[in-house]
Image 1 (spheres, one colour):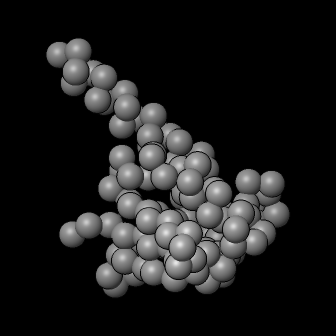
Image 2 (tube, rainbow, N blue to C red):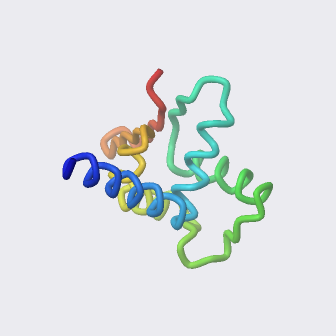
Length: 106
């Protein structure tokens, strides 16, 4: 009983963390909008895609939480990575090859 309540609280906390973070929200929406929920590219490319979706969704990209450059996007993704992964959205930040992969396993 305790474990079920704990798991439910964890899920709720992760959901609230994603919903309150503009980058996490747009990343999740972006993946859900793709035919195949898998994307690989540079942080600058991903930021361009997210900016387009944020504009369509009326998300304030002038907010201090919204990254203005690719390297800041990588930082923001690291902040929300555990919460997104708990919700089934996975992020691989490859600093050697400067690539980001985000995906939802099928």
